[in-house]
Image (cartoon, rainbow over all chains, first blue to last red; front, side, top):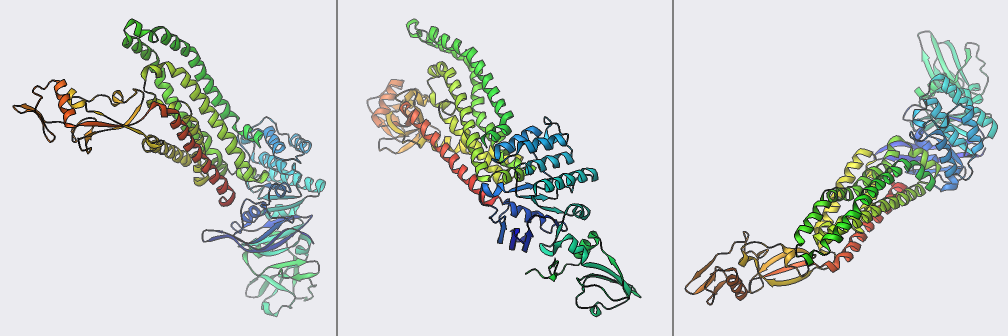
Length: 298
Length: 342
């Protein structure tokens, strides 16, 4: 697995407050990676560090083999869509495309124009008068038409209505299918990530709580319901992520790559939402799920 | 990047060009008449022996527009600092578009291009304006004979002011990160810098000259305009101190003491000026007699002044000061945006 983004004990400090701390992770290449976590977990900070908008206070970060602040060649490899998809309100759609052409050697004007046509955007319209969904699409177009190796998107759909959100993610999936670009997408909307991502990283309080292939994650977590039981009595390969008990009954959300043989349990698969919520409400040591089984990252 | 800078700046750029054009038209319409008036009346007034009427009518004709132009030339650098400089970085930070711009292009290049391009634009606008106004005002300036009073609206210095105001605005925006407070700070800072240089810098940028002349104020019992005493009426008199025979400073503007009052009396032993001594040979208090006595007692005036011959050297020096400050602030902005704005 080659990593497109690799961080080692990365941290960013503002005064005495840490926005991100001890962040160690490796994001595999060629995937659509979802970065999920509660507000303030450090998602935006991590993405800004990756694209060179911020400088790390401690630790290191490597993106596509280079340092993020390593000049124009490094910037050209990355397409970035910032949170709330900023555009220049007083410049028209067409001028945004010209900006791209002015600033990038490898600008693909055909692609950009094609996307604007497809989206039915009026090139003369000022970006400030676009709807949130249209603006997000414009920002995505600007990022994609630079033909990057890696697309970084910071909560691109958070402020969009469900329809615009679906269309945006649709666009993103088409781009991935056509260009084979790697994508890192942060969101706190789990349902959206489920639709587009094939790899997931859960970031809580700047620590990676869980990372792995989506299918592996869903295939290794189960909800067990049965008679009340002490979690210590569960088999050692079953790691308890979350537990709840009534007088007679226990419910566990466990992580295991072994079959669950105990007939006392009613075993149910978990949804991604359950999974993310379980990890978010029970912060713990980092877990990396691989096809081979459980492993602790570093 | 230059094309992108122009694209963003276009509206403001056209606005400035439009303003310059309006000024140019107004000056082109009224200027030739001013020159004509000068050539037909003032230029040969001494032959007719009535120069005051000629100069008065010329000044009356040009004064109103002259005041407007004075305000325009003074205010344009400040406006450049406010509307071009302060929002340059602050608005990008405020609206979040820096995240778009600085991930498209390295911020060093972004900042350098913006500073360079808009800085040059600022200097061009101020330079053209100064050139036009200097040309238009030249007949009036020749009549008024006080070039130092319009020093900061003529020649080269407006270019320096504009460059400095622009970069000061950018710097305020970079540090404060919000447009409106940055504008206010830039305006205050620019006004302060102009004031400090004009009052405490300009008189001494080149060593001023000194000349000692007989005190004529006491005899004429009134203050004469300092410039009238200078070797050339166009000289700029910075200070005028009254000294006694020993060379000690005893007052200002030919007067004595804080009020400038002199206690003189004529008695049997001649004229006595209290505190200085008496002149036994002077027995009347006509101005000529008083003058003889003050000369006898060694009361003189020392003028510290910038001669008209220093005018252009002072212009260049003040231009260099403001351009230098602008360059230093530009370097600071580049460094700050690259290193600290993260």
